[in-house]
Image 1 (spheres, helix red, strand yellow):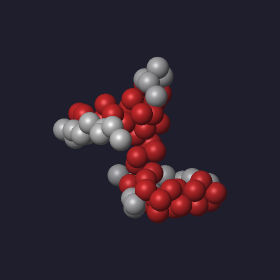
Image 2 (cartoon, rainbow, N blue to C red; image 1 turned 30 degrees about the vertical axis):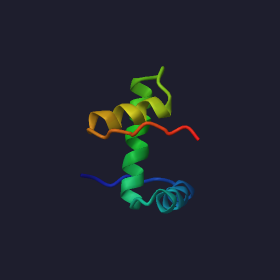
Image 3 (cartoon, rainbow, N blue to C red; image 1 turned 135 degrees about the horizontal axis):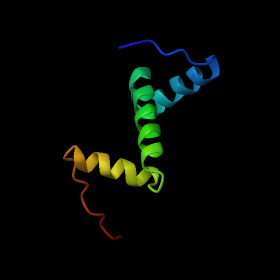
Length: 68
């Protein structure tokens, strides 16, 4: 484990995003890093594709949408 130095403005955005996402600041940073890495390794996939793939790999099943 190590320390990552980031600009103050990026840290502020990270703090705000973590509050909105109900994650710790470290959890939000890890999420952004992971999604960024996956995006670079899979340039043809959207954020939604990556998130769905990761959720499925973790065993999360999304229920079908109910038509109104």
